[in-house]
Image (cartoon, rainbow, N blue to C red; front, side, top):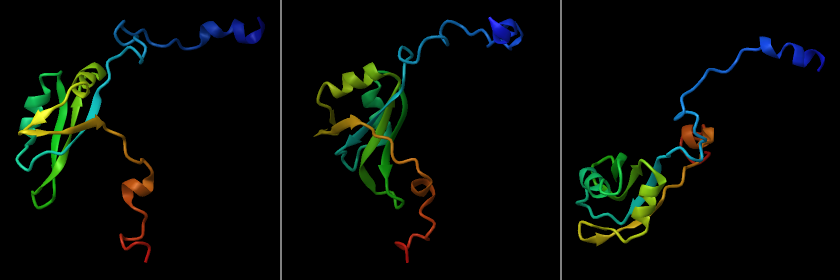
Amino acid sequence: RGLRGAFCHLLPQPPTIGAAAAMPSSEAPRATKLFIGGLTRDTSTKLLREHFSRYGRVLDCVAMVQPNGRPRGFGYVTLDSPSAAERCLAEPQLIDGRHIEMKRAVPGPTTAAAVYGSGRGGRGGQ
């Protein structure tokens, strides 16, 4: 056994966790974020939330606007599970009389330059 086996009982043991927390991450429910495109200028965050709540619990929802308040024509909805998102993606969605585009949201770059800028003052490197 050697010394390693002889002293294993002295090592700190991991804390005991409940059955729900012990579930492998592949089985645990995961929130799923969807990109929603082609929105009318009248589509609000409230309307998006109401529409998508019939598919599952909406954890987060936003209809994007410009700093001056003008709608940008797209938004994001985060549903509580991948199955809820699949139900949405499986059928055409009509919001405010318009068929909208939906797809899974793709995380943006997480580099320091993307988050904080390149450090060049936003002048294109000048």
